[in-house]
Image (cartoon, rainbow over all chains, first blue to last red; front, top):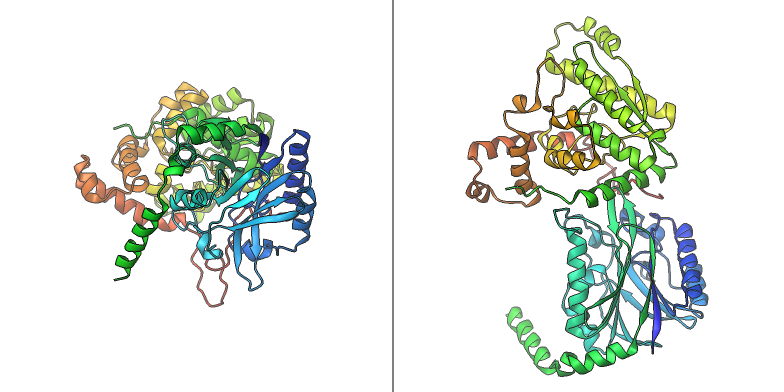
Length: 283
Length: 273
């Protein structure tokens, strides 16, 4: 179906759940008013990013009142949102929820927790163990959280699992100033989102936050990308923004006719070779 | 070479946004800084004026009796160009009162004392006007340790601490910092005729080209030599970086508990902001 997606390029406050929930609810209302059927938020939209020892303090269970409120709102608009989830056995996950028609339709726990350069997620968070596509009213969808997308296998698995839409929730720090027009990190992401869409004949909705935490900026630039790799809408750099993008079902259909790489993708060869590599590494 | 050239429009947006965001999220509107007459503090004044509005920037020039009068004139030029709040507070009485007690102190001790005297004045004024002290140390100085710990290195926020001196020059051009300030030789102005580059023994441009490759690009010593840097220069700069590392860290705490500040008690400074 044709639909409108909203990318809520917000500026969460570090560790302030109430303030951030208010921001999220306001953006949801804005999305509904703007005629969107789906609203996407950044990674850790409910909590802020550089949480460190705050992780256990801002973590919520899936039956938390904040999620109950989002469930109610999801009767009016589908929602993809990031938060810290605490499991019953007290592991803390960087989690993305997809809420639709009053329920949690899917939960993705970030698999690739970066711990290099300015990142230190694996110190504070538990690792997710799976990539699974899921059915929505917009067709089959896969969710990724930021660093997940830098691992080629992650969007590949989701696309092989039938996803035709990839949603990536991000808190990407801006860095790499040079002579170039954009920041190094922004340019790298723009290449990645476009190339991923093109390789997998999928649409990509990328939502990145803005604001500063301890001097580190988040660069925004949220994007809706067509399955051809063309950018159909892009948010402002470094500023709060609310991007509305019209999504054309026909563009997906046509791209899958013109460039049927996913149809031709040979799962058997891939699995066979990966199994061989795994076997040989084990020796 | 010239690997240090930057997109100044983008850099300006990030640094102005940084000052605006990090100052206002604390619940204040004002920035306080020492305006020496040199380019680093001039640039920070320009960034702050754009971020907070000139009426919310409070700049202080704090000359000692041996300071070059040209420094104060240049500081005033910057303050006038921006329309920021400006005041001259002479530190001679306080500094001389102390050195009357310890007359044998050498130039380095005297210079450090002056830098720390200025720091106390900035922090006092930050309380008086209700603002944050803005740092004016650039990445080159911070890496070389060419600054006074708890003196000019002290601040609440430093917008230029991740840009090299060469980039300070470049960005200052883009901001329209007065020509006289951009063109003059960098000086700590501790005694007449002193220049940074004379004291360091190399130029900032050369140091920046080396530091960029050594620190940002993590090139090995062999790669740096192959890139044309003299081994003695590489070793000298490396030694300065390593030898001054303590200045870039918080005081070391003896660990005895299970949760020691900054070791395993870790929160962002923007906690709850």
